[in-house]
Length: 385
Image 1 (cartoon, rainbow, N blue to C red):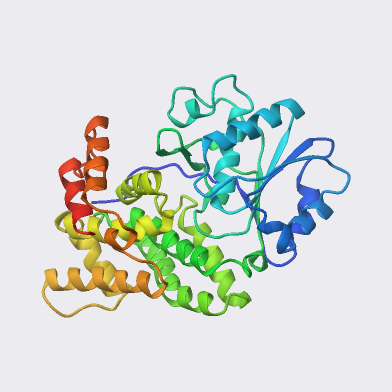
Image 2 (image 1 turned 60 degrees about the vertical axis):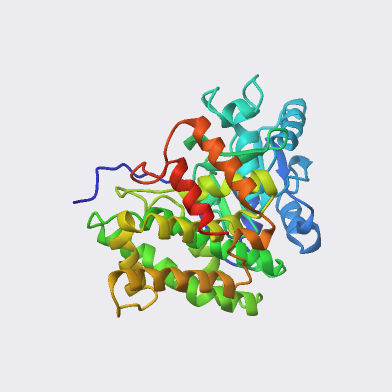
């Protein structure tokens, strides 16, 4: 086995470190109508909003706030309507992954006549988009340096990922100091989200991708080391920089080049968020151990490699080492305060039936081998009751 042919191009300019928001005015072309998008208003309290406004002095600015976690298309439609009315020419999302993901949809929807949801479900092709420059305040999704976006539809309780190279940010500013006031749960979710992003590209089957594997393992090792530290000391710049950069590198596209990718954990986890509103990171912490346990034969070699290189597990039979690796990972998630069983969220067999039914109706299987069918999805979720 060998790495498959691939093409890799990531044009996002990253400005990382203290005080980089001040450079915003040098990055956005003069004379453009700018829309700032944000979430619940935390940027007003931690000083980030003031930094952004100061850096954009002299620009014609319109604002749209209230983009919620797991951004809803119902909210984004309002932003699109405002953007069209104001003839917005540049978008600046200030916030975490949900704000940036939602703004990516706004960027594409501003230039079509169809409903924004048509983009998400691939009824309308993205042919152009309003440019984006992101300011990240919550490490987790890696959206600041990729083409991906995930959007929910409240009306039908659906959540889907979509993406296009045209909605990649022109630049992203990452100042770890903007994360100092984050709630513990958001940091914990971000650590888990980053960990699972790596696992979706790593925990498949080996193709002798030594560079990809070693970089992936270095990110996982960093998260295991730094995750608890950054939770315990959120204003430690050293800890926060390593966490923030880990999240970006985990999903900038590089470690997935030429290797099999899974993404079943995300696809199943999206259903838990759509149906019950469980935080994205929490759903991943629930589902991934089930995927690894149920699909262990196909993933055996990489689970054993993970156990040896990241968790130092070398003794025992193969099955014992697989079990211990999964247990170590679960223990890491739980050490961050993240619950890993469905029952701990009040979710039972009725929800499992609903999720399995949804996948049956879609008529396709998921995973790196396309062998995670509805029957396996049921086993995966029942493993996590």
